[in-house]
Length: 481
Image (cartoon, rainbow, N blue to C red):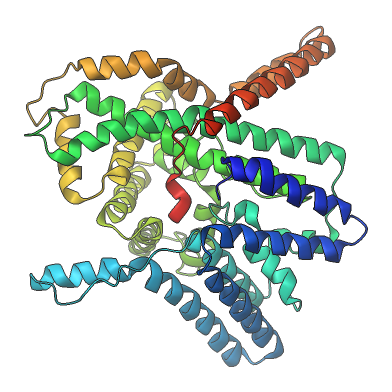
């Protein structure tokens, strides 16, 4: 069940929301209702693998209690923490990477030595596993209070707004909110607006960009000798996919944050206009912030980080983090190449100290967009063969020429979508609101703005629901991460 589905929008969410506030007299009943709703939400898509979710809740709850009861016995506390790492990462490894490792072994021997069991990947396992593991590690470090109520920890791990695609929320962020959160009409209305904004970005931008990207990338699966993909068409595909991925993922984060607000929770931001960045390091600090924070807190810093004069250690730690970041995204070589690609550019930026270079902002923006688009092509290609073909098409090495009438057709058909995608990726809203606040008749202008905002959003929501009702194209990239 995805947020941008009729089932969720017209049935699941209204029922969960209405019953939740009917139970406003009891926080315990509200939490129990949210836990039940979250498990139902997960079981809707994973009727069998919901057992994995329940197992994660029970095991991590027990390990948290074990660390707490170990008191000052540092050795025993460390043992339980290591067990938590092995248990969580072991389950993630079995379900997500077994087939990939078998593929590597078979390729090494040149024959099918091992049979691929073709284990289906549980939805959102990378997200809820990292959340559960962060809880145990924070308890071990003394940064989080041990949750003695298993149902409360279960709500943290399984809460449906950020269960499937994040943001990855640390337990320390919400531990007080589980029992002491407050919600009012202002918070609920802001949450509804944030959710609707994400929904519109998903349906009107991401889904339409997916049509362009999927059609163009599919052409390269046949090889450049069968289907010619000129340079122009290849770059249109790269542009469409770059923004599809951004809006697909950021819209889900918007909807998750909005849903959290509707139930009284405050989640951290996951995207902060990454396309305004002037370096790759800045871009990645604005893109999927919760994942970057997780790796920084639980991998990079424990390894020693990048402080001091030991450049070799910094390079080693960055390599490990970016290799793991790539592997986290999926069990395929393209994700590993994607992580290493960003690693190379971040290292180069550290060497030339790009953040200390003044001026040349336009060139730096162009540089970032260019590198990011190449990285997203790497991310999108299904295997090394397609990656090689697409790179040849991008740079005219396949001899397919530059001009493409198909590209022109896509630009005409989806030009408004592409332009809108570019504009909404910029902080224009903040700029306009700031100008309104400082205008001579700011209050009057703001009143008109709010009326136009509500009317426009309502019209777009009705249109979007009609698109979904007609069975419009509605993929979600991060659904199985």
